[in-house]
Image 1 (cartoon, rainbow, N blue to C red):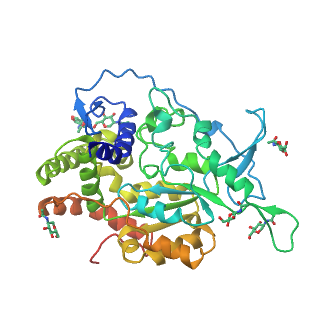
Image 2 (cartoon, protein in one colour):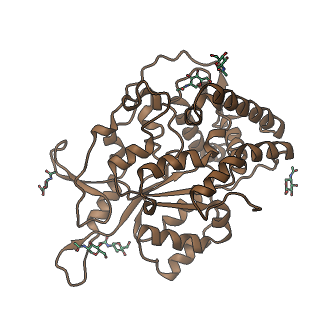
Image 3 (tube, helix red, strand yellow):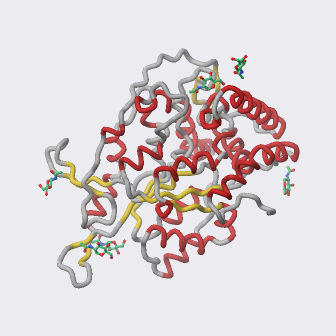
Length: 385
Ligand SMILES: *[C@@H]1O[C@H](CO)[C@@H](O)[C@H](O)[C@H]1NC(C)=O
Ligand SMILES: *[C@@H]1O[C@H](CO)[C@@H](O)[C@H](O)[C@H]1NC(C)=O
Ligand SMILES: *[C@@H]1O[C@H](CO)[C@@H](O)[C@H](O)[C@H]1NC(C)=O
Ligand SMILES: *[C@@H]1O[C@H](CO)[C@@H](O)[C@H](O)[C@H]1NC(C)=O
Ligand SMILES: *[C@@H]1O[C@H](CO)[C@@H](O)[C@H](O)[C@H]1NC(C)=O
Ligand SMILES: *[C@@H]1O[C@H](CO)[C@@H](O)[C@H](O)[C@H]1NC(C)=O
């Protein structure tokens, strides 16, 4: 029984452990040790030496993507003895955490034109590349798609009335912290000396995969945050309670408001010292992050989905995604499987957020939700208006 529990919790813990390891600021970083339940226990903060070596992603590429591949693939001749096909993701589910991306990813993985032989999240842009001890290089990131590349390479068809083989399969990524997590932006050479980031994950992705299609799935930010807190409690072995959550949110909101007194709004949105590992208030300021993505990506490369609408009508949302990704509708039996597959990552915690905290957070997020709905036109996070 215990073994089963560890196996279930383990991936969650590895993910949270990764988040923790690249946060360098002492107030945020905490000691992690495994306990028998596969969670972490928090000890005093370790002494952190600032060993961070920035990897300049802007020096990578541009890649010569092959015209007979739908997916962004290229031949890597320089760094390897044998010519090998390298593929990058055609699409990214770039945000947001605790909004249903795991469920969506699972369903998409049934699609015959989507190859998903790698884990859902590499967390390369938001984390792995900053890892203190063994930071990933961009090559490491590309390596994660090597099995997918093989399948994409082997699978080709002749276009109608053409003599050239065309490789139509695609692959994707669903590192949902890509959208909002740029915690070490100020360490990057491109942002050196700045008071707020000029380069965020959006810029790196645009540089590396200019045509990448981006999916943002967003949920009521108050609900999102409560869900993140409950999830974090399970992974980090602290007792979730609505009172603890309330205190935490009062603290985070007050830090944010204090920050605004002396720093720009953008600077505070990107300042991770506002939050704790238990839950990140800043993530739900969707509009602030989306603005940065829309600054560098054309609108038609971006798809917005509301979790609330997704849950009500999964078939409709999936069809929207097929259209957006320019892939065919799968055969009926597969589509049925996609629609009917078991819901993923469902919250099992029984407690509820207290009404006072809900009001507190709803009020905090309200102006940002409003700005988001203005930015996206038809899009609205407000449930009742
Ligand atoms: C093959 O057809 C696809 C669309 O089905 C098109 O996007 C692609 O450019 C074509 N490839 C070639 C090599 O003509
Ligand atoms: C890599 O090698 C292949 C075949 O050997 C060649 O067609 C291609 O142009 C080369 N690519 C680069 C970037 O040199
Ligand atoms: C190519 O992919 C399609 C769809 O996934 C599959 O039906 C077909 O068997 C594949 N062909 C090869 C040669 O891998
Ligand atoms: C903001 O700056 C003022 C003046 O420099 C200082 O007195 C105050 O403590 C600062 N507030 C915060 C929250 O840093
Ligand atoms: C984040 O905010 C703290 C004060 O709350 C400030 O000391 C720190 O310099 C800020 N970090 C950045 C990168 O602006
Ligand atoms: C939480 O809320 C749901 C629905 O609003 C309710 O059915 C449930 O009893 C509540 N749970 C607790 C522990 O209060």
